[in-house]
Length: 387
Image (cartoon, rainbow, N blue to C red; front, side):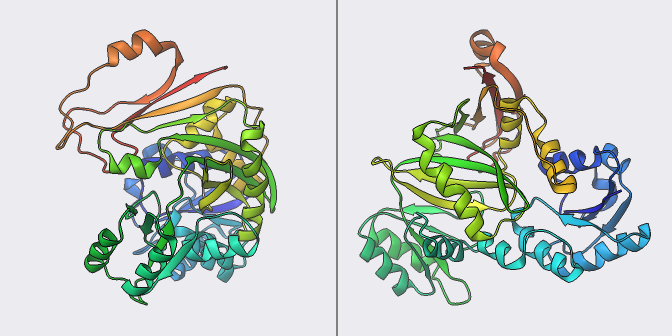
């Protein structure tokens, strides 16, 4: 019976979907490490737990190590796997696994994914296309790099996720103003990148023992950064039924090579990339964890399978064999127009009348709901169709 520990810093809804998937596997002994008390976990998850340890900081590798050892002693059985899905947890999880001698992505590889400037350095050393960048430790360094580029730049934290703290800056004077408000230092550098013009996509993959076994392409309409710049835009994502054509040939070749260069060993990953008007590509960022923003649900709809369970089987049993893609799937993210809280929802009758037979999942906003502040908005509608 495999004995696994799932690091759950906080009992968030999305995280619980992955925990449920592991808990539902037959013949698995599951433990959870969390900052939340066990009572915060949903009752159905608590009913399937075999062990629990509460820690003060679930991103501290020492506390993760001690909690995993504690759970294993409670079982009288050595823990076989330790993992989690939170972006910020990947390095401390790798450090804890190294201390415990457990399999999984190494510390060096986890840092390759988490530290975005280091990531791009690795990609460039392996001849992989990515945006030109500079990890600036001073305002002068950031300005010199922007002058050399001669165009718009993107500034972001060196270990960010989900476009948080990421800004497009078009003019040098605007960059100077931004740097005065948040001057970089050696202790708190800022990542300055070339602004890549083109369409944005993602490339989801499954890796088993270092071997590339699955990929999917998601098309963004428009880019998340543009959505955040324009409050009226409703973000959309489309997973085409067929991703084997020549339009995606470059990422099908470069994506797996990038994961190998970065050292990804096992799991489902999420890569964001751009296709320029001339057809060339640039890899933007890669995360060594499953995608968020309902992408796992979209993958499940496209393949007509529970993709959370597929991930759980990959992580616990080293098994991954979803059926072929049967549908195109897409999501419209419902983003409130204006400011304040949700006042009303309109248009549902028209959606039901025109598209109701295509809708397979939805989470509707409710009056009084606070804005999410993200490109995902306050809800979503997911659709699919054989064509």
